[in-house]
Amino acid sequence: DTGVSQDPRHKITKRGQNVTFRCDPISEHNRLYWYRQTLGQGPEFLTYFQNEAQLEKSRLLSDRFSAERPKGSFSTLEIQRTEQGDSAMYLCASSGGLYTEAFFGQGTRLTVV
Amino acid sequence: KNEVEQSPQNLTAQEGEFITINCSYSVGISALHWLQQHPGGGIVSLFMLSSGKKKHGRLIATINIQEKHSSLHITASHPRDSAVYICLAVGGATNKLIFGTGTLLAVQP
Image 1 (cartoon, rainbow over the protein chains, first blue to last red):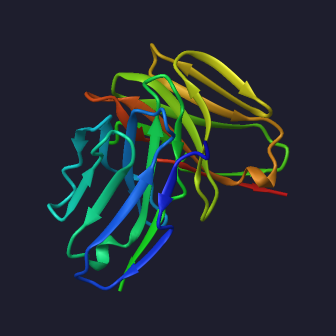
Image 2 (image 1 turned 90 degrees about the horizontal axis):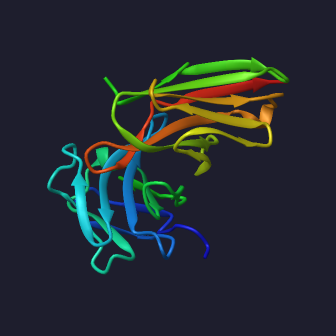
């Protein structure tokens, strides 16, 4: 297993376009998390899945953001009608349970121009 | 107020010094992680603790569940230890990952 992988690593998009990111967790991990990190700031929680169930979604997220994990394996994060303020690093993490380590992907860096 | 607070926020040390970074949390937790992030780099997990103490090389992490406090110690610090250190709690109503406020460490040669 190569760890948590995210695709793409970099995305440049024009304002108003939709983007979709993918996260493949470590294969046996049932918990998957999405975070957003802007330069110089700590990661900000977006949403969290246990298997295919979305257990929590940040109130900070507007309706333009949606995430899915349809089969309890990989997850997608979609941002509709992107805005410049969406420019950030989008991080995915997975863990196998409450008492197991969390592993982080390298992130997808989004730039909205 | 953040549910997971770290201190100090910024720390500058001389090479060789013993370093302590503190983490206090106000929510019930199942476990606590210490993470490292180099500038422009990815996040790497250093430790996962649910009780007691763990040691890996020059790094030591402790947790006191009753006091809701954890510490990360670095012995014989080195410039390559310069990074952001993050305390990450598994807690809250849904046991999500809750990030601490982070500590930016700079170790000068």
